Image 1 (spheres, rainbow, N blue to C red):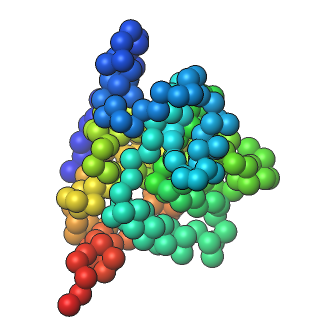
Image 2: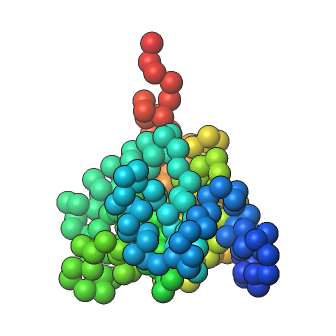
Length: 222
């Protein structure tokens, strides 16, 4: 069933409440107030630190990435299917859930999974930099407890504005799958449907029942 999603533009920031609203009504504990304004160097420093902190950079604000163990497992398992399709065909770069991507100046996002075709890299070694200076052709978001609908909607809008062609959004708790081919063009799949990679990965097909039945996403077998 096709569903239309309207994405509203950000509003001016006068208060901390405005800031949280612009970031997608996220919980305040995910906002790092120091340093401010933050830079890409801060994002890399925290990602390389001990303890490691994965943060997205949004207009000078560091926002800690929402992630849980189940969501991490889900992204990894899904990534194996994508890698198995991409690698033998030499299609491009598949990045995992800690890959920093500069989708706009001042905006660094960390998709849970991302694919970019070789032909779309801005330089031969662009994928070898600490912060990838390109957007994903396919971006995947796996919804965690502290993610909000507004936050995911903003990410979807930014991905497509930066040039992405496909976004998959998964909620492992409900087995909900949303496929976006534009910021306002979404198809919701049922757990019995088949996920396809069009238009980014033509020929990719994954029965969602197979994905959701993976032993690592279910209670331990007795």
